[in-house]
Length: 284
Image 1 (cartoon, rainbow, N blue to C red):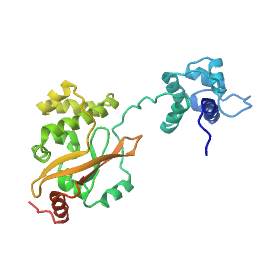
Image 2 (cartoon, one colour):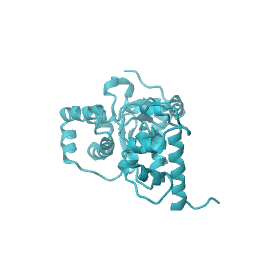
Image 3 (cartoon, rainbow, N blue to C red):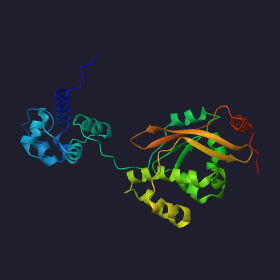
Image 4 (cartoon, one colour):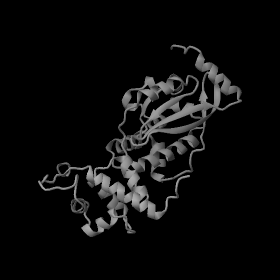
């Protein structure tokens, strides 16, 4: 059985982690002259303290594992000084017993090949990948059959844009108002994480011009409860189908998520939906 993670032990872990990250950096990497009389590898404590904007004594106490409090602002400065990646930054905050501030949201990402393979292995389960802006980056054949992603230009292949501007999506999500409000609330939580991203801000502005419903609801600032994982879709060839759905994080740092739909078990419409997916689509 592992030893309990006491405050004393955590401070020791924090001290060792800081020292290891300081020693792996060269002066040149942080814009300092190399010098010729360095007895130890990496940066000196006084150099890290100066770059992070704190006093030498205070930083020395921190690296010695003393019981001192640190702020989230200082930890962010220290993360940049030590050139920590996202995983190391998260680890630093955990060791310092600080709540991790959200990293600035990014809307760019690339879908790994393995995720494409995963979706292809789900012929009866509509699945697609979203980024933080809710652009639909990849999908399987079942999702394309239901949502028609491949028939849209790439710059309009955005789930929120489709939901609020496409008459076909209003027919598909039935009832539309209730589900659109819930989906908009979910998007608003992502918007808060990426308010400085010009792409996501541009999407909101475009939607305010294109959809009166979006404009009115967006400005009301209503926040609904968490999604219950149920979607009601009307598929012309099948009728009303109830789906269970969930969202799986497949790349936390790049905000990549897989959305997975499954027709509710035990329903005649669910069985009819799966049968419909196995039929050849009718070309119009």
